[in-house]
Image 1 (tube, rainbow, N blue to C red):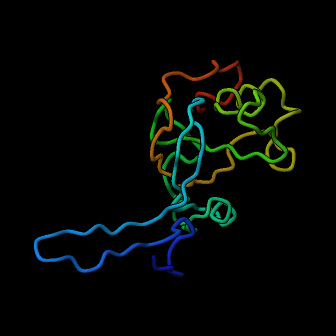
Image 2 (cartoon, helix red, strand yellow):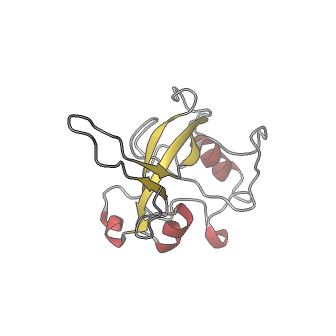
Length: 163
């Protein structure tokens, strides 16, 4: 394995195949650090490549690309299973794979923000909502089953569907 210093933070190693014998092909490959997440309660793996915010670039280990801020429909999400999904970041939140209080569905988060704004807020105590950061993070696959339904129906005045 060759270690490179001029690659994105998600590239852990590059394996270059030696020159192949005539008429044969030898594989080259790369080791990538992927992220575990959830979509409608189902575990997924995704890969962050770039973002329009310098702090998000550090947190997501991706490339800072300010021009990404000009992408259409910033902060939105079309529907269950769409190519555009929201990311939810929390500090001081519940954790643990078996903890029912750890939020793994966007409607659960939005419902909690709508019904208990004292428990879930935006930065500095602002109302919970999009901070307008775009992160290009492709879903690589589901580790169990693809989602077929949201875990919770939206409550009145929640942020889903997008306004």
